[in-house]
Image (cartoon, rainbow, N blue to C red; front, top):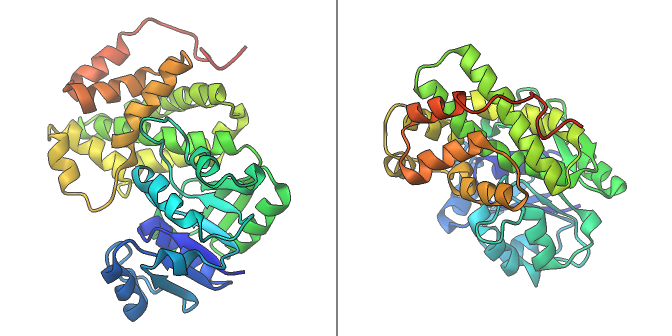
Amino acid sequence: MRVSVIGAGSWGTAVAALVASSTDTVLWARRPELADAIEESGTNPDYLPGIRLPDRLAATADLEHAVAGAGLLIMAVPSHGFRDILQAARGVAPAGIPIVSLTKGIETGTLLRMTEVVLEVFDPNPALVGVLTGPNLAREVAVGQPAAAVIGMSDEAAGTRIQSLLMGRTFRVYTNPDVIGCEAAGALKNVMAIAAGMAHGLGYGDNSKAALVTRALAELTRLGIALGGQPITFAGLAGMGDLVATCFSDQSRNRTVGVELGRGRALEEITAEMQMVAEGVKSTEAVLALAARHDIDMPIAQAVGAVLYQGLRPADMVEALMMRQAKSEMHGIGK
């Protein structure tokens, strides 16, 4: 089966390399010069420099060429460009093609998850639309460090086929029919990673960070359940696993933004220096709108939004969180 991966950032490239170890794969890059560099050097010099890519991986900036005749479409573009690229691919992709999203974000304005955008644009079989998610830092996966992920797809047979395609000696993949839970966890954790980064930037220790991450999990579980996800999903790779990796790794773009905010730098200055998108900066507003729509209490997310959009100092955010009214630990989750 020929696989098309749309988006040549670090994670799109890493996943394309995983797939290309077993089948012909085409990686679409928005910039022709990047596609040419990948073809000529066998590496992605902009996003995964120094890592050799499989011979069965081809790169192109021609979207029609990348998508035509593919048996699986993997979307790896940022949330703010997801719909436009998908619309451009719609007339070319074969009918009935399974579509997997790697994008951990929420569309601004519509408040749709990426699989919901796919359903709007493509009108495919919903059972063949899914997500790949988990604690997957691209460079670690690309260099072959042991890692695990989950493919969320309601069609069990299709999910198992994609699982087999991605599995390897260093990358273990599980299946989960809870697409909503898997996808919601991945999108919501980016907001929490910014908060964890701020805690680090403020100089707080492990007690503070552990408490923050644990309560962050409670928040994303509350909203994820309200969206239709299953509670157990948030205790797995898509929830706790991804949250831990993103909140504690120096490779996390969202955490990096938080660290610099905690150190007193301005958001515009931080993002101007970044080569890749930190989804949490854009999606925090959408997450808060979703929480308001479903009447879900998300104090950490609200505090992050106040820092990002209203100029609240990170140190003041901490005091506001600590002095909230006392509640049960299972507030909004347990019966």
